Image (cartoon, rainbow, N blue to C red):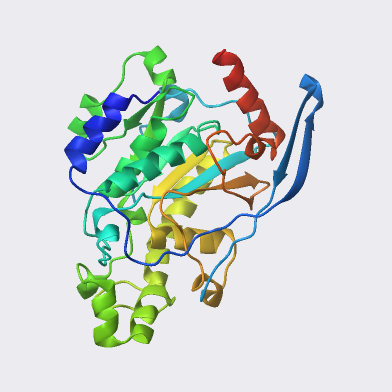
Length: 337
């Protein structure tokens, strides 16, 4: 779906001259496994896969507009069984300030070349999972990641960013072809999913700040639940807006059997995961998210079941977690033959 020319254009326009490894230390999620067997008797199809997951940690409103109807604007994936749906969470790829080891917060910076590559790889990892609607933050690094990931999806649908800023914007961005609507995926921007606002730390080098104020103080600013950096947001405050938006706008989509992808930031996603996994304020301190790594949840019977991360673009086992995901993968294979 994505062409090399497109990727080259993106690199040239957005991240020319930028690259290299991030100097800041990163905590990674590691996924280990045990065997899972799923048999789809109606199709005599069997997926056998080792699926394991353990997380390694160390020291450790803008809604869909009321005038917008998914049923009338896009084709909804009919793969759910018993109102089961998929939720994919992705932290944006490496940004230019991630690379420079600077506190970014709500400063709007783009991805590096490495971040672009991470976004494309994330897209390959989720390319066989059903998607009906995308949510992303109002910040460019989230939007770049979402768009680049979607270029890799096998459904071949076009992401359409919803514009409801004014009545004129809504009218001018309407689609009048029903066939085109069915080949589209709505994308909703929400400032509530923005990164935590780091206040007077924004733009400062993390290492230099630790040397000035002490590693323990900087760790409290970065990882504690209720401690605010100077004139900034605590994780608790970030959680207030991110989780409220999730409950009010995203969870109802899942309840209706729609498959959702959320592309956001370390702290807005930590907040959402704290809600999904019922983590305590102490437990969330140890939660770290890598850039560009998708996490999969299954939403069923009003419960969120974490299924880990697809481990590569050719990974088939993740689609054997449930019958509906396996059937969707089979349908994609048939359509692309």
